[in-house]
Amino acid sequence: MQRDCYFCFMRRKKKRPLFENVAVIDAGAKGKTIGKAPDGRVIFLTNTVPGDVVDVQTTKKRKAYFEGVATQFHTLSDKRVSPVCEHFGTCGGCKWQDMGYEHQLFYKQKEVENNLKRIGHLELPELIPILGSKEQYFYRNKMEFSFSSSRWMTLEEIQSDEEITDKDALGFHIPGMWDKILDIKKCHLQQDPSNAIRLATKDFAIKNKLTFFNPRKQEGLLRTLMIRTASTGEVMVLVQFFENTPDAHTLLLDHLSERFPEITSLLYVVNQKQNDTIYDQEIRCHNGRDHIFEEMEGLRFKINAKSFYQTNSEQAYELYKVARDFAGLTGDELVYDLYTGTGTIAQFIAKKAKRVVGIESVSDAIIAAKENAERNELKNVTFFTGDMKNVFNDDFIAANGTPDVVITDPPRDGMHKDVVQQLLQIAAKKIVYVSCNSATQARDLALMNHAYEVVKVQPVDMFPQTHHVENVVLLEKRAEKLNT
Image (tube, rainbow, N blue to C red; front, side, top):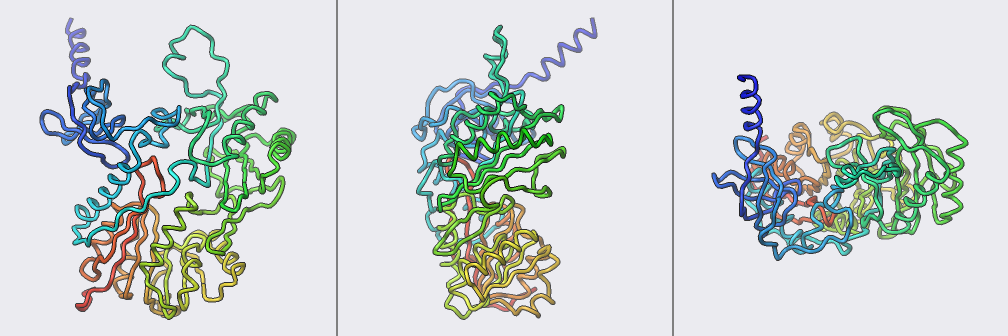
């Protein structure tokens, strides 16, 4: 009897509270929206839009907040729009597709401002209005899809008495589930021929009994499919195989080559590791070139399978123009481009600078940067490889000169504290900080606030239908003597 009561108690203990008529008042980090519980605690929601009034089933309870999901909608927000994608709500790629684009921009700008003020405790000028993307759909130049022999199934399919025979999938991972793939009928993020190539690949594989990968069993032929498109019209396709069966590889690749003659670069890789990253793998060219070209203001950039390039080509051009404008170059400046990647920003500004020095930790990226600079006939750009916190030191400054302007575009984690300290020590007149994470950007700016003043702030939307936002900040050296 006591044992039965114990389990009854445990079941009652695990029951999560249900809150009724919760007003959704704001958008928060990571694409979630915000409501308030009756006790004043914040509720983070995943399926609402600011302005909705909903009943909330909580899924997680913490000391300072709840997490939950709306189970009933009493009032629908006037900020709502109908999602264009049939996969919305299951696929985690476009979390804000049910919110009007003008409202997406509002909340992105608000997040940038809040992070700079609350995390950085910075005095800000009036923010320049966020620069929206001309294209809200079909703007990505790179997509990666995964094969699965056991696709994600709906609750209706699971509960059905009918036998499910079509279990193969080619699509995206279900958020938080490494082994579950949602089969995609049409994706609205990349322009044609992306959807046609993906669907034709899946159809041919099924008809020819080419097996799809099973991540739990670590078996199956087909692992991933990457498609890159460029503003030049060139197309790259890379098929990642798990099993090393050359005849099967050739069968599929020949089909894609014949079916899609517009593919400029048809590549493949055989990867039998536990994970599907290709950066330590040998890429093989089946047909065409092993690269494609992107163009920007007459500059040509060679893009191979492992290259990093901003995934929204048109908006990358706008982002780089903001960075160049903030730098205010006259032709006499020595500019350092930190975290230069394949050197796109460095080369983009080179014609307006005396000399540009780029630093990047990925050696393949620097090789590509040097090749691109030579191809673009830029004689005033130099690139160096190494871990930023180790390379960017006093000896490096002594050898290459003290910069007048520094442009820094670090990864999401922001800059290492040693890099920040070195920036303070060299005391360039201007720093242009490009960031894909305004929270870590705010942290770094706070460390420099005694020496630099925030003069301009320009958010740029690179990823419509998502919560992600880029931000560009111009820092100018304060008049008082630096205390470093």
